[in-house]
Image 1 (tube, one colour):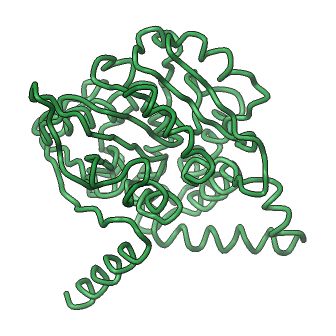
Image 2 (cartoon, rainbow, N blue to C red):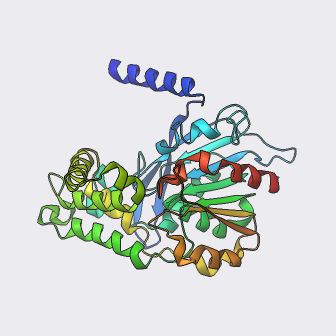
Image 3 (cartoon, rainbow, N blue to C red):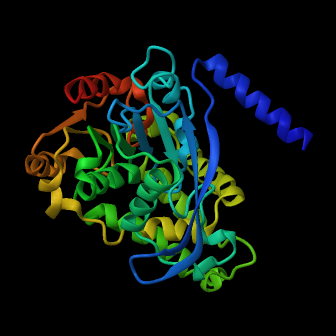
Length: 352
């Protein structure tokens, strides 16, 4: 207990020193949650972080709530870093927590929310992005009594959730900002690397249909695919200029990943994207939408031209691709706010 208190105090002091406020953490439980495929859970726990205080306009509607959704295998904790919170949540910054009420949920199957590794393992309901978005909406409306969002944004998987959220609840949001994502079915190379990672887990004899006693080595291959696809090739070549260095990096990455990750959790998280495809409903989005990708994103490569094509279906949609530079870091550029916070400021001004 003493160690946990010391760690909490250290984290709090670090956040203050870094110039951004500390988030408070909570759980919201949904009773008898029904999943899209007909499966259910008697209790679905959604863990979440908040910063700031809810404000209501003269007509009683919430007017300062911001929803930010995380990427695959991540959690809301990924935003509480200097590169994100330190650029956005502090005094005078674009999402100043003294002015905005910021909600950072852990999606189903992720972080502190209900997930396979809690005990059900492969018997956990096979959730999809639709289930994840629906649960977050219920957290907002039922748990936090938020009836409107000033802004919804998300990175990677959270970016895909942002497209879905804006389609499903078009009058619920004032502004929409998806990062590192495309509003189309996951196919081509994007589907291939996910299937390689999933197959590495499920074809490993040690997986035992999800009833393993130690993490199957297939999880190491999955971690390698995640490291490969989320990286910037220029940075990787600079950091790992020899064969032995590249091999050692992957071995070290796998060893660390096996200590903290769970094969069923990773498998479910990757498989949740299987029926994602907002392309046919983009015309339902009514709020101003600004999509931001980066030129060195291997998962959403700009040379496909998909973002430029699909954004035309969004009534008030704009797309920006951040050019490759010494500052971009591949897919992970989505949480390096210095690269794009000027666009966030512009979106907030235009949607005010």
